Structure formats: structure tokens, C-alpha cells
Length: 493
Ligand code: NAD
Image (cartoon, rainbow, N blue to C red; front, side, top):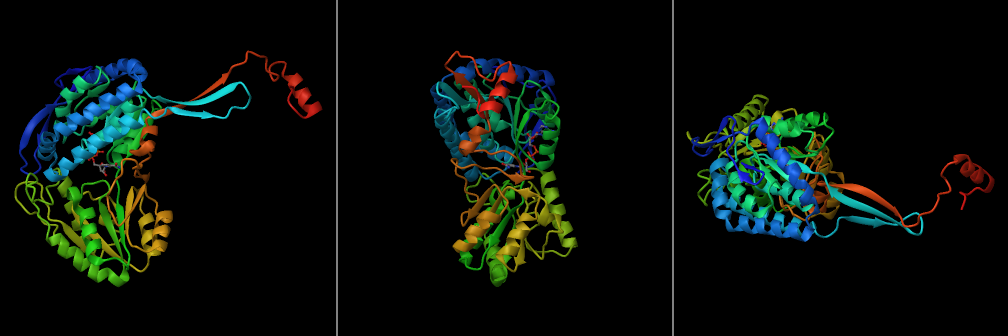
């Protein structure tokens, strides 16, 4: 862990870090005790005074150096990530690239402006909106993109002048811990702190009166708990939560392209992406051909050792996660769904599950309504784009949605009507760090990336400056002002 610039061991209970591909324990990582969490918060609080005043170009240089360190250590970090999280190595190498790029983006954005000048009500006055950091921010992160999702918080938070206390997922702390030494060297003591542990450590951060902002990515259920407990100290919560993204396939698509895109969107990171496509709505005319093409592409995927570059689909992160996916599949089957391929375990060792294609599904089934977070693609037939959009919007979630079509009228309709933070046309799951990412409805209330992602880590202060030392006509006695108004219809000059 990293507390006040020092690398320290947790003094709390050990938590096993397990390799999802082998089910073997890699190591144990001690949790932070409540006292250690408090020490990390205090160090972030103390460091905030100077960090807030550090010139933005200096902060930018440090963020760039951090990006360079990640790039230089990408291979090692990616291997650690694969060992602890099971995501294929090829994907984790990309995660390092995106993470470095995010740091570079906010390093520059953070020095562009810190507010605006607004027209004042009178000559000789100046009205400013000054954007200020909050203070010590807690960044609570899940296991599916442990470094990237951390950077989406840490980069804008630091660029805006906040200090940060990071809590990685107990499943994937090793890659974050690997960065601690670099963080200690690159940033002043206390600016960046890392505490490890399970939910309790997160709860302590959320409960602290000294942490004014929680930046959280995780499940809807935990998001609700975070929001509830944040109410006690009235702190701001930035929530990036789960999803049940729809994937709509219109009748004008090139089948092979749409099927390959759909397979990518369904199974990337073994379906453990918050924006994984988890519900497919296919327009009637092409439904049968699409299902056929989708099945054929699914059967080509290589499931296996995530360290092997030939692997397309690795294991799920934990046994409980696989159990959850299997339970959803079993319940859907019980309700009449048909699993055309996959859904079975591909190995006795490791939390592997063969990618599943499921038909005869509808929104009465959890599989088609609740987040699955596994390699399962349930496909339903719809009669029109209107029906597809209506069913897309019938969900509580609103993270992302995909539409395959080249018809401009379809694009405009879908763009306007779909209730989701991102709508992708013909290019699933492609983020752009200059554009905001986040959810509508139960998928959250924050935005990461883009200028919006910086804004979420700043608060606005209005500064009203009058450069004249004169009496104001509306001061006491107030009745004089009122009388003048009544007699002349204007304020006294
Ligand atoms: P999770 O909610 O179980 O845990 C997330 C983090 O919160 C972990 O670090 C955990 O230790 C911590 N935590 C747990 N209980 C807490 C509490 N009461 N107070 C404070 N912290 C607490 O989620 P997970 O299983 O790690 O991640 C998977 C979920 O994350 C999925 O639902 C997925 O959709 C979501 N996710 C969302 C996005 C997004 O950007 N919207 C991105 C990735 C993952």
C-alpha cells in the first residue's frame, strides 16, 4: 500500500489473490485496518493544501511521467493483470496503452482553463466562475479493468488539483500495488495513496467526513449502498455502475460484419465489460441468418489460457461469478429459452465457460433483464426498430447501446430515442477519451473521460468583484429603495 509517500504493509486480515485460470492462490494481500485508512485520508488531506496550489503545468508533467512509466512497464503490468484477473494478455496490453493515453489527455486538459468569465451586471465589475478541486477523493475500483478505470478517475482528479486515495478490488490489487513505488517517486507524498482490502475498507472511505467526493465504479447494488452511506456526510458521489447493453441489428446490415461485431461485443473480456452487449434485438427479416452467422463466429473462438496470445476468451474472474452466470442460464432454460451452443464448462480447472448463444428469450427472464457479466449472448427477434428501441428502453439500466445499420433515418431515430450514456453505430465498444463515458438511469450518475470527466472532479465557485468602493442604492434603509422604485419605476441611480 502507499500511505503518505511510504510503501507499507496492510495490518488487517489477509485476502487471497487467486489466478482465475488455475484457481491457485497467487499470494495474499493484507487489508488496511481502519487506522491505516484514516492515515491515508489524513495524508491526502494534508497534501491537498500544496497540491491544489501546484501550477497546472507542473501537475501535467507529473501525469505525463506517470504515463511514461506505465508505457515502459506495460508488459509486466499486463502479465500481473492477467494472472490476477484472467483477462487475456492481449487485452491487458491494450489496457495499459489506453491508461497511459488517458493520463496524457488529462495532463493537457487540466492546464487549459479553470473556469470562465461571465458578463457582469455593471461596469467596473468582474464575474468569474472559478473551478476548484474538492479535496481528498476516494477512487473505488472494480476488477474488470483495474488500471484503466482507476486512470479514468485518478487522471482527471489529480489534474483538477484533488488528492486521491485509491482502493482497488480485492480480486485484482497486485497491478495497482505494482504501481505504488512509481507513484511514490513521481508525486509529492500524500497526493496519491493506495489502501487495499474488501468492502469494509471502501465503507470506511465512504463514511469519512474528510473525503468530500467518492468516485466509484462497480455494481448497482454497491452503488446504492455507497450513495446511502454518503448521505450521512452529504458528500458527492460519482457512480459508474452496471449495464445490460442492447445490441440492435437492422435488416440492412452486412451479416458477416454485424455478426463478427456482435460476437466481439458479447464476449470481449469474457463478457465482463460493463458495456458488454447482453441483449440482442434482431429485426425479423434477417433473424434466422443472423443467429446462424453469430453461432458460427462463436464456435470459432478459442477459449483457454489467457497468457496465450491465441486465446480469444479467458476464464471468468471467480467461481461465484461463473455460478451466477450458470444460474441465469439454468433459470432461462427452465422458462423456455434454448441454448444453441456453449454455456458449459470447458475445463475442470479455472473458471472457464464456453461462450453461449441463447434464443427464445424475453424480458421476463433475468438473463435478458439483469446484468449477466459473462460470455452469454441472448438473441430475440423484433418486428421493427421501434420495437427494438422500446424494449431497449424498458430496462432499468442505461449504460450503452449498439445499433448496426447504415440507414440514416434509423441512426437518427436510435440516437434520439435510446436512453443510454453511449450509443455506438457499427463500431461496438469503442471509447474515445475526448468523449464522455457513463450511464443513465440505474447505470450511474457520473461521466468519465472528455471535459465532462474533468468537470466531475471540480466544483464551481462564483466570484463577484466590484472594483468601485461605492454605496449601493438598495442598502438600508430599504424603504428608500422601495419608494424610489414605486415613484420612478426604476432603482435609484
Ligand atoms: P462491486 O460493486 O462488488 O465492487 C466494486 C468496488 O467496491 C470493489 O473495490 C469493492 O471492494 C468495493 N466495495 C464493495 N462494497 C462496498 C461498499 N459498501 N462501500 C464501498 N466500497 C465497496 O463490483 P465488482 O464486482 O468489483 O465489479 C463489477 C461491476 O462493476 C459490474 O456490475 C460492472 O457492470 C460494473 N462496472 C461498471 C463500469 C462503468 O463504467 N459503468 C465499469 C466496469 C465495471
